[in-house]
Length: 91
Image (cartoon, rainbow, N blue to C red; front, side, top):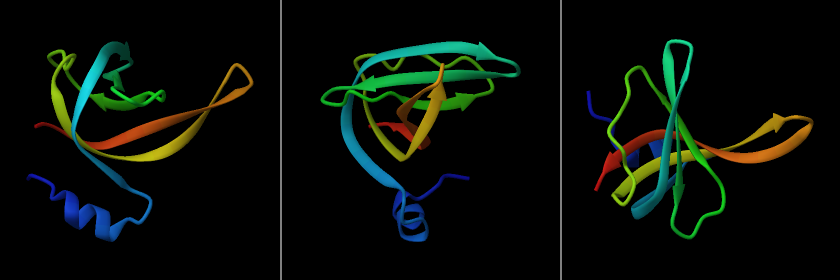
């Protein structure tokens, strides 16, 4: 069932939307049953992360629309800002 970004944004105030943004890099790594995908976007210095059950084709160089929220992760005692992706579509 496709999700409607406008409905998601209205229902959850902390969500943000980016449209037609270019992916600089895309990395996938296995984490148990899932693959953690990390993408870096043009003009942003923070990673955008999401999980999938199967490997996905590379998004590097593609333009995407995504819905995300800000999250802080503690790595080796240091706090990092990470964007957790709720919805991603190739534009």
